[in-house]
Image (cartoon, rainbow, N blue to C red):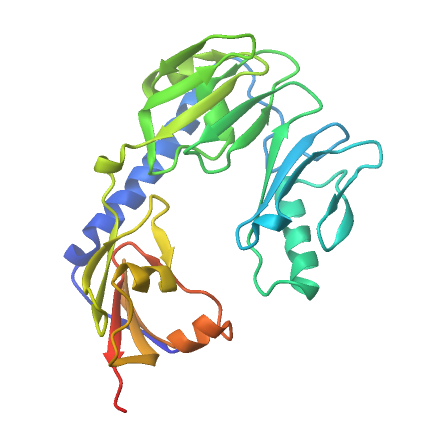
Amino acid sequence: MDSYIVDTSLTHYSSFMKRQLSAFLFILLASLFAQAEDAAPPEEGREVYRLQRNDSISVTMFQEAAVSRSGLIGKSGSISFPLIGSVDLIGLTVPELEQKLVELYKKDYFVDPKISVIITSYATKSVIVSGAVTRPGGVPYPDEGIISLAQAIAASGGITEMGDTNRITIVRKKGGSMVTTMNQAGEVELLPGDTALVHTLPINQINITATIVGEVNRGGEIQLPASGKLDILSAIAKAGGLSRMANKKVATLRRFTPEGYTVEEINIKDITSGKEDMLFIREGDILVIKESRF
């Protein structure tokens, strides 16, 4: 695939920059709240916490649901996974386990496996942060002191740009729930076993689009999911599929960046057959399907 940079006006990607800035401000706000609390923050977050016996994990492979599984780390310190068998987990961080599983599955079974690991419960006390945060899952509860909602969200990577900062539900392990906002998160104390759910923005407040033009049956803007990306084959299907005159070998993808935009030649036929990795359409992209000359 060939790509090159073309200069363009800042007005073409102002929406892109606004969304990036919004996500940055959400994470920064959570971090500031965490620093403002008098209580000691959690000593170990997901990046440094090392798995131990009696932790429970959930492993998801996005390409193949049959490979995904959940389980408790027992006395052996391992969990058996489809195709690759037993894997030792003790002492690994979440990113280390994700990388280990990617390497094991990539060796003999999948070209580019995408794997996510979530600690669903800890052997020690914890709270759960779920929903529209960067790294949903368990957050260890400090042995001494308390943990605020803001600290727990910060330990989970902050709220994503699709998260609703005005709608966070806390469910108590012993019953009851409450709804709060990010503005109040620094004052909300979580208890061991609590679950904090950050809701996503209502769909009518999310407008993420890309454009497909040329030899498709319904050219124009397509709506992207809340994640902000969609694989190219699904994107073409949203545009009504390729026309009879479409060139399946050569298409052009224009992607806006702060420096201008990139132009990339792609081969739809090779992507469809698996010869090339799947390509994902993102917000603001323009996909041009060319006409076949034959």
